[in-house]
Length: 429
Ligand SMILES: Cc1ncc(COP(=O)(O)O)c(C=O)c1O
Ligand SMILES: N[C@H](C=O)CCC(=O)O
Image (cartoon, rainbow, N blue to C red; front, side, top):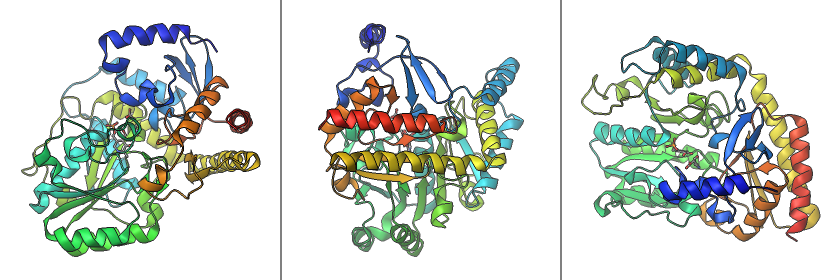
C-alpha cells in the first residue's frame, strides 16, 4: 500500500501544527501508522492523496450518517453559500433547525446553537450551575464530553487513547468540582449522592458511551440516574452529541424512555459542518442570556452554512424513517459477521452495538464500563487496525472509539468488510 504522499504531507504538517493534526485522534499514534491524508469522500468511501480508496466507518467521527457528499446536502450548502457565509445576525434557518430539534426530542423545548460538542457540554454545565446555584458536577469514567476544563477528567476518546485522561492544564480548583463515578454502577452513584447530593448541580452522561468504545448504559442505571437527580434537585444532562439523531431520530433518550433536563447535541445536527447545541425545558433554557442572566455567546453560532447542512440532514432523516431500519439491518449484519469471524478463529473478542454504532473489543470480558473496556488488548487492536487499513477498510484508529455505519454503506460494503476482517484477524493469530 503506497502512502508516500500522505507521509510527506504529515511531515510538513508536523512542522507547523502540533503533532501534525488539529485533533489528536487523527494522528493514528496508538496504532503506529502514519495517517492517510484524505483528498475526497463520496458515499461510503474516502480516497486519500495517494489514490487509496477506503470504506469509511469513521464518517468524520459520527456526523456523516448520510455518507460523504450527499447530493442534497451539497446542494443545500451551495445554495446557502451563494447567499453569503455568515452575518452575525439572526436568520430564519436557525429557528427552522431549532424547531426541528424540539419537535424530534420532546424533552427539548428550547435550544441554543453553538459551534461544537465541546461548547454544547461546557455551556450546559454553566447553565446547570447557574440554575441550581451549585458547583459540583458528576461525570463518568471513560465518558468524553469534549475538552473543556470541568469535563477533561477521567475522559474517554483521544484522552484515553493517548493516556492522558486527566490533562495537564486543568486547574486543580476546577477539577475538584468534578466528581467521577463508574459507569453503570448504581451503588457508586448512591454513595456519591449520600455524601455530596445537595451540592451537585448536574450529572452528565453519554447514555450510550461511544468514547471508550461503544458501551450502552443499562436501563436500570439510567432509571436510577433520573430518580436520584430528581430527588436531590440535580439536573440530568444527556450528552447526545454522538447518539442524537444516530441511534434514533428521537435520540438515545427515546430508547430509554427518559427525559433529561438538558440535552447536548453536535455532529449529525451540523450535517458535517461545525455545530453543537444544547436544549431543554423552557424554564431552564430561559436562564440563558439575553432572556436570563447566564452568559454564553458565539460569533459564528447558528452559522447559515452549518444550519443549512444540518436542516437538510434532519429533514432527510425525518422524512425517510426507513433509513434507521436499514441502518439497523446493515449494522446487525456487520456486527454478527465480525463476531462470527473472531469466534471461528478463536480470538477473544466482545462486540457491543446499538443501532449504527459498534465496537469490537479485543477482550473475553463483557464490556460494561471503563474498567472492562481497558481490559482490551490494544496491541492486537493496533495490528488488526493496520491489516484492515491495508485492505481498504478505514476504522477509527483506536480501540476506544465507535465505528459508524451510514446510509451510504451498501450491503456489498458490509460483506466486503466482513471478508476483509476475517483475513485481517487471521494475520494476528
Ligand atoms: C459524546 C461527545 N460529547 C462531546 C464531544 C465533543 O464534540 P466536539 O468534538 O465537536 O467538540 C464528542 C466528540 O468529540 C462526543 O463524542
Ligand atoms: N471521539 C471523538 C468524538 O466523538 C473523536 C473526535 C475528535 O476528538 O477529533
